[in-house]
Structures are given as structure tokens and as C-alpha cells.
Image 1 (cartoon, rainbow, N blue to C red):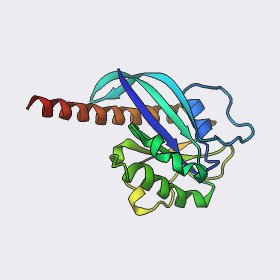
Image 2 (tube, rainbow, N blue to C red; image 1 turned 90 degrees about the vertical axis):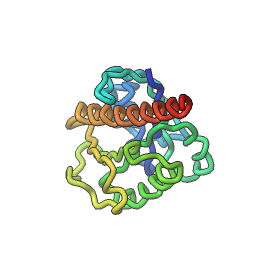
Image 3 (tube, helix red, strand yellow; image 1 turned 135 degrees about the vertical axis):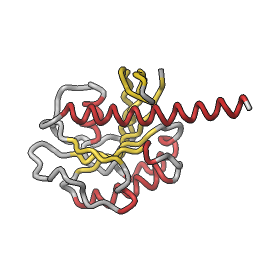
Length: 187
């Protein structure tokens, strides 16, 4: 069984906590009053039946629901330590989020040298959102990342399925790294 540490990042009020609660089955409630995350909130859960390298694998997930407030930027190096993947969430109804996700990508994917396959963009739609499902107008370097649309009221299982596919890609990447490390020890 693989242990996976994923960082859930993005601008303030983008829907990170709602998404984290849904993915980890931490709560049934969707919506409610906004309460900003202070620093980080860690949710741990098992995720059986993840497909990686054509195999059905179980994994234990640490989902780090990180505050989008940049006043916690000094804590970011500690958050990044030993992370295996990054999920960047943004609200498609807030134009400033498109610029902010570039900063999160640079800080949490490019600087620690994660592969693009270890990063997932989530265009989160709040209930009754008027935003479309097309590809948002992202910076060129972000267009190569996997993007999913998240509307937990309209199609929650599509979000869960896409997230499991992302988990499978992260597990595959970890498995390949382990194999290379073992081969380097042997030779």
C-alpha cells in the first residue's frame, strides 16, 4: 500500500475545503458559511481501488487542505516537504484566481521539481455558478496540466473519478521512482 501526501492549494475562497471534505468523505454537507482555513488542515483516509500501472492498488492519502492566504507563505517549505502531488483549486467565477494559480504552480510544482503529472488543476464551480465547462483562459505553461471541472451539486461522482485517476498517476510516478532507486542500489 502506498502512502500519498497531496497538497490542496489555491486562492482564498476557491472551494478547497469543500472539495477536501468531499474527497475524504469527511462530511456530507456542501455549502454553508465561509470559514477560512488557518494554516493547514490534514485529512487522512484510505483510498482502495486506485488504478496505477494497470494494477488495482490501495493507498493511504494525507490530503493537506492548505490556506490560500499568503500570510502563511513562510510555512510553505514545511508543507512541501515529502509531498507527492499538488491539487490547485480555483474558482472560475473569480478572474484574479487565474493569475494566483500561476504563483501556486511556480511555488509548489516548478520549484520543488514535481512532474506535471503530479499536478491537477481543479476549476471549482460553486452551486448555481454561471461559468462554463470549457477550458479557462490559463497561462500557456498551465495548459499542459490536467484540468477537471468540479461542481459537487451537478456531478459529484465525475469529480471523484477524475481525482482517483490523478491518484493513479501519482502512485505510478512514485512506483517508477522506487523502481529506479532499487535498480541504482542493485547496480
